[in-house]
Image (cartoon, rainbow, N blue to C red; front, side):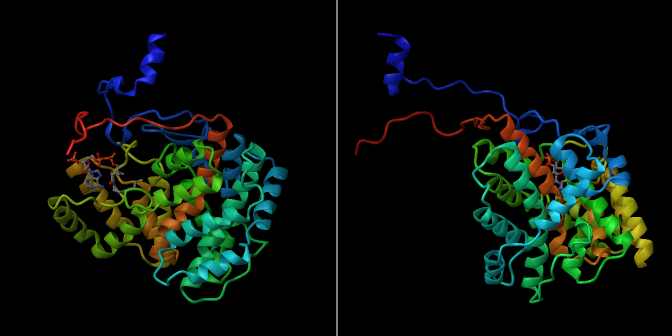
Length: 387
Ligand code: COA
């Protein structure tokens, strides 16, 4: 009989594989191919080849959504049809709103978003159709409804009445309206829209990777996005922008920044809004977010936040050679836009959901199960005790 077949039949003869090299935290590991977005440690961030600085200045979030999904910028007609579709898909099914009312009032908005996203899957007739066309349809629905889940769950948790969608408003303005109940000024809408453009995608970051892992099992797009929301919540990833604002509120003046920071560093604490797995000399989104914070500071009479952050940047670079990431400046920007700190990470999700969806579509278009190995560090093979 064939030797290999004999080996297969005789499980006890299986050999222990030799230990291999590995990279803790998958640092530096290329875990897949993608044509969506590139984080170049030196040249910065591009979406489908377009530089983030040009995108932030010239495009809108809806244009970015189209670009991420289809690979090219939309024509006027394509953009108009995408906007219309997003408007049409904004409302939540009534049972989802009923479920949001059942959540304890102390629920974190990220948990409400994750729970709501999971529930939305059951109302989508396209759920099990994994074709590109169906995935794009579901993705547009998911982006539109993620925004509503965040605004509606927040208002419900605060005991406030819900507001209907404003079909005349673009995505960012509609978000602010449904959250705050007033039509935002044009500059405010533009600012939130720019933030959405900045946060839309970032290569194989932790939440995107978890979306791709889930999608690679051929689970549906809602399962993948629910995984991603869960992953984004942690303070080493999206949760950092909520933590950053607590830090800045403790410091308050540029003169206090160095002593505060030295004390934390002496205790070996992590400083939120600093460090990045890929960028080692600067996060390309920071200069844009810093200027938004400066502009807002002048408009709101809160010009102290940028100097506080700049002082932190100076000392962190001197002491640890660590640069600020986008979440450092996002925190004061959200604060000055009158957005509650607990919504900082959901706001990130409201935009990043577009990148997650693009990655799920790309993964399932040319799928291979993502299933790495671990380096086993447990006991060697041994016999089960007889007595
Ligand atoms: N504050 C203080 N020290 C930090 C730090 C921070 N924000 N980020 C990294 N370091 C230190 C680590 O302690 C480590 O020091 P050591 O070599 O003396 O142990 C060194 O820098 C390397 O850090 P490491 O944790 O290996 O980097 P990473 O690539 O694994 O982690 C982050 C990247 C983003 C998770 C990490 O920088 C971090 O925790 N930042 C704060 C959270 C944050 O802002 N997240 C949002 C990211 S966009």
